[in-house]
Structures are given as structure tokens and as C-alpha cells.
Image (cartoon, rainbow, N blue to C red; front, side, top):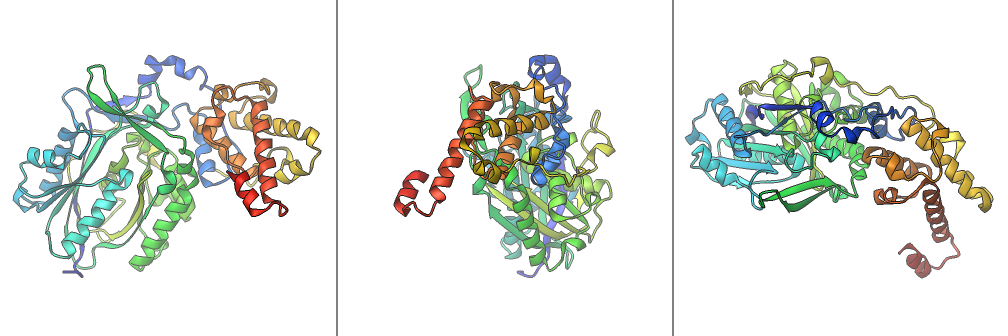
Length: 490
């Protein structure tokens, strides 16, 4: 059995009935946009692929979010998961008795603590074992990897995988993170396919570098019931800094294991947790944008459901045909990044979900940013010039550099900015990450996001940066003994 062809036999998705547009926040929380309504273009500012691709979205308060499906009255994680599961079983032309194993990855379901695979099995009236699995946004591919191995060794014939994401209830409505959170469920059956079809090669790595990107806390709601609350963590910038490296590492290794090349792949299904993520992936791999799609405008971030939804809509739109080579890539924060290459089989689809309200076909076409070759450094500023200058004018040089950088980042006139302005008033989380990345590139020092908050002004940030540069320069001096260098580093 180890040489048998195993892969996806059917696909199904299920989404809530409520489609929430941006008007929900504009009507209820207009105060959130008093500061954010400004043209925050970042032309010629990006220092890497991620920052270049995010640039076109900085002028949009919602960062490319258009619609998202959210749970309504009478809906729950179980109801959506059941609907997707039943569609996947029926599409595969199987009976419930022919499902040998249920693997469930439910992110932010109603049950806090252990997963609810057994609850779902009971709801579906399945008699097979039911296991929980979790790897954040990569859960679908990790479950597929496990299911393939189990079928190949002959332990199981047909394995039902159900993944879901219910993020809308885990974030505060006034937190900008809520704009990107959607709900939904997906399911697929893994079993035997025709010869030479199915999974050909995979690569999975851990993403420990992104630990702390999101924080999940246990709180109680108005009725005293426990629930998970999610917010952006201090290490959120690592999601951007590692994006290109992870997609290249996983995808290049997966195609090598499959014995093919990236040029031979007919379709790429990337997870799309942000409006620009598909563009980042196509740029990183050097592939044509028309070989993938971007469902973020339709569904926003639906976590582990993203690869299932991308594959479903690609097949439905005729972008994937039987025997096509397909590469699926996902990245989960503080979990895993994964890429799988498969020869697509005769995959049956469940019912089509409700169409979007305002999102068009054109909105889901991947359009990489137009990149200029101009330098990102303002006014020929450089770390070397700063360190070589008279110490008496270094503070002034850094303040001018920061003011010019902020003027470009926020697209506001230089004279509208003042050295005593608080950065917390000027920056949101995304623009803070952009500034943080440029400081790391131009000055070769790291600044935490928390150092942009509170009463930190442009002038005090310049002073902080000078102190960091002085310490780095002192530590790197050969005259410092190793023991003293270690003390200084601490």
C-alpha cells in the first residue's frame, strides 16, 4: 500500500449567512477613522517584498478588507462544520459507514480547552474514531499529511478532515484586528485516487520565530461565560519578516520532493490572511499572478479554511482541472508553514456558498505592486554617515531622518510633523511595523513595537536609537573583552 496514490477526493465549504461589510464599523465606530482617514501611501518606501506589496493598501483604513462572513443567531461552529462535512461525504459518494476516521481542526470553536472532534462525530452520527489536530492556519495541510500517511499504510481507507475558523467572536469590535476576521468551515475526504494522482511531495517546518505574534487570553463575556480574546502581540512584525523565507523554503523543497519544478505547477493555492499575501508569495517565487487567486476580499482571514476555500473556488472557476499539478502553501503563526504538491484528481465539490455582496471577479485577481528602483533611504541618510558625524549633530540628523520617513510613510507634508509629536498618535499597528522594518534595515538595530507607544515622541525615539547605536558600536569594538561584551549585550 505504500506506493498507492492518495489525495483529496472531495471538497466542501460552509459559511455563515451574515456577510459583514465595512459599513458595520463605519456606522458604529466612526471615531476609529478620524485619525486613520488619510492617504498613507508608501511609494518607494518598501525595503523588502512584503513591505512593497503592502504599500498599496496603506491608503485604505481597512487594509484591503471588504467582506467577511460572521456567525449569526442560531449558527455555531458545529452547525457549519456539520454542513461542510456532510457535503464532503455526499460529494465523494460515500456513506457515513464508509468514513473510517474523522480529523478535526477547529480554531476558536465554542468548546474551550480540548478540541471537539467527538462532539462533531456525535452530531454527524459517525461511528469511527474522531481525533483533534491543531496547527493554526496550517491545520488543513498538516491534517492532509497525516491522513495520506494513514491511508498509504493501509490503516484507513477514507478519512474525513474538517477545519474551521471562528475569529469574529474572539476580537473586540473596536480592535482593528476585527476587520480582518471571518468565520467558516471546510471539509475534504482523503482516499485512494487513480495511479499517479494525489500527493507527490510535501515540506513542513515550524514557525517558532513567530511565537508571540498573536496573544490569546481567557476572558468572560457579559453573561459570565468564558471565551478566548485575541489581540496582536509584540512579535507581530515577524509575520512580515519571515513571510518570504518560509514560502520559498517550503515550496522549493516540496517541488523538489515531488520531482517537478515551480514552472511546471499549473495552479498555486496560497493562504490569504491579508489582502497582499498572495502577491507576496507570487513575487517571492517569481511566478505569474494569474496562476493563483486571492479570496481575501470575499472572506477576509478564515485561518485554516483558506487553502480549502482557495482550492474549492479554483476548481469551481475552472482554474484547476484533473491531472493538473497543484501546489498548496500555508503559514500558521507559532505553528507550522507547509507546502504540498499534488497531481489533482477527479475531485467532487459540495454546494456553492452564497455569492459576495460587492466583491467582483476583478477584486480577486492578484495584482503585485508596481515597484520603483529608487532607494528607500531618505535624503541619502545612512548608518555609516550618522556614525561618522560629529556626536553633537547626530540627534538632529536622526530626528530629520525620522521626520522625513514619517512624512513619506504617512504621506503628509513634512511641516505638519513635529519632533515632540507622540508616535502612538501618528502610527497604527501596520505603519508601526513598516517603520520598525525600515529602522532595522537602515540602522541595523531592532526596536520593539512597544517602544512606539505611550509617550514616545519623535525626539525621544531618536535619542533611544542613538543609545542603541552607541551600545552596538561599543560591543562590536575589538578592544572590549568577551566577558564585558556579554555583560553589555545583556
